[in-house]
Length: 115
Figure 1 (cartoon, rainbow, N blue to C red):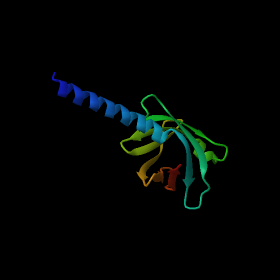
Figure 2: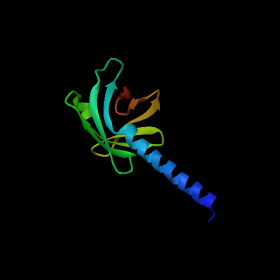
Figure 3: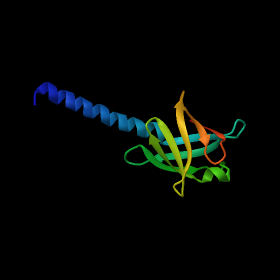
Figure 4: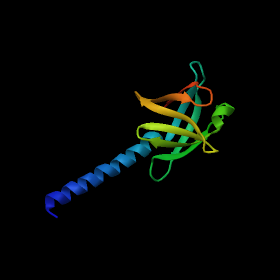
């Protein structure tokens, strides 16, 4: 393999690794979930697994009981999926201007997930 090919392969590996690190940093941490137009925000803490593309969710004491059912998250491309402890899909959120927006599947209420 030529030096140029080795440099290109090395650069690609570094960029791919940086992408995984960015995914972990962009989702892990504190979030506020709002349900409905006038809903009070609920505190959620996202932790990431080793891949940075999924992990656990811990609900804060300010969360209504319905949101306590959300226990894991998973990225699907740029979209985020939220799951209950049973493994059922609770919501599918799409990114827009630094916020994830979507609809709760059980009742069709709008969700917003922001920092």
